[in-house]
Length: 347
Image (cartoon, rainbow, N blue to C red; front, side, top):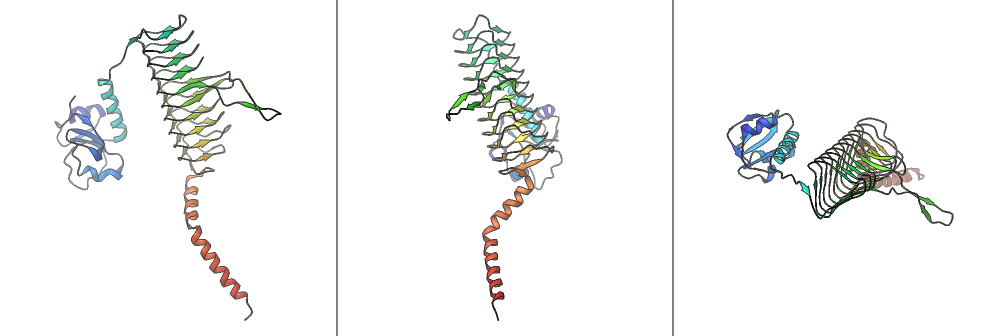
């Protein structure tokens, strides 16, 4: 499909600078762009590519000041990253083939309830009293357990497992290999040193417009619910413990671990491989840097923390500077001690 700069600008509400009839037929990163491609520039570290790119159209910030001549047609917007994301979403909606129909190879319990315009692929198992609402897509080899519910227009890709009674909201996406409702990690220590498994009787609730990446594990609550609130986005390979609550529109990067009964505030940003202990909470807007270990409650909203144990971000940076200087400081202290010893000697 081909689109002109004028058409693209209309979709993202941008202003064309250059040839409004310039045509694109592909999308690309700015550093790899070729003739006929559309790309965007949001990080100024890539600005030098703007002056050499072969792209036909580049989406840029409305306040970007050019340092050199640009051959590409520009479309200026308030936020290039968001505009480009919106454009890709529009393109996907125009070109994506939506599957429909129920495979004869699927196993659907007689007591299950299936809505209209649902896709259920080969070897899907829909267990007793489960419910799949209208417009949802369940890809091959996925399991939806007893009394579980998948609400409207949600997508469960291949090899997803939704355990009994768990609830998936409207417009959710769960990628391959993820498990929703596995047992929480609860074991009672015994007098002989062994551990007795504690039954996990609760459920998992995914509210609307939640996305779960590939190979994530969201544990069911011991009692009550583990909750991923509306708009939260989880990357691949993430563990969420029993009875945890992930706040609205929070984003969590790959390999992070959230321990049981932890409450993550809304609009948090959690970096990759961060670890958060149980029974604590974070305020709204908290940013946790990658590989941080958070061991206590964060009360201050919009605070950035880093390190292990996690501390205020700037304090961590200062500590890192001092740590790198320790060998040099040790030599200076040793030299000062020698001079001090010489001064103490009787003259």
